[in-house]
Length: 115
Image 1: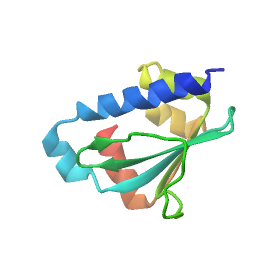
Image 2: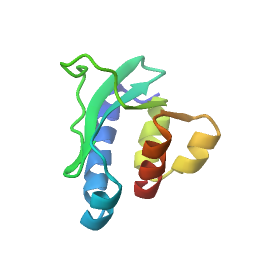
Image 3: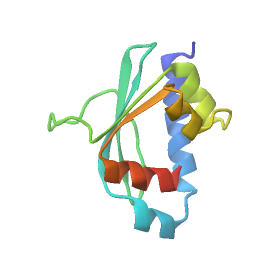
């Protein structure tokens, strides 16, 4: 099981990887959304945003407006680290239940183009 700090590092790295997506793809497929990433085995949730400028940063505190995240990820700590390190395929992880994504159908289609 990965630690909370290892998950923070993985989310930071995910943001850096998202920065590598070309600007044209981002402008086509990114809609600003709030994101929560719940690490089920650690029972901790990180909160961030996806926007044209990037992904994150992720923090420990929910948004001040109190609204629930528009895109919710649920994942195990080891799976998060493996996913970010390229050792776990997102599609397979979703279909096998290792990653759960709760978002609108439109958001799922847009995210699929970016992952």
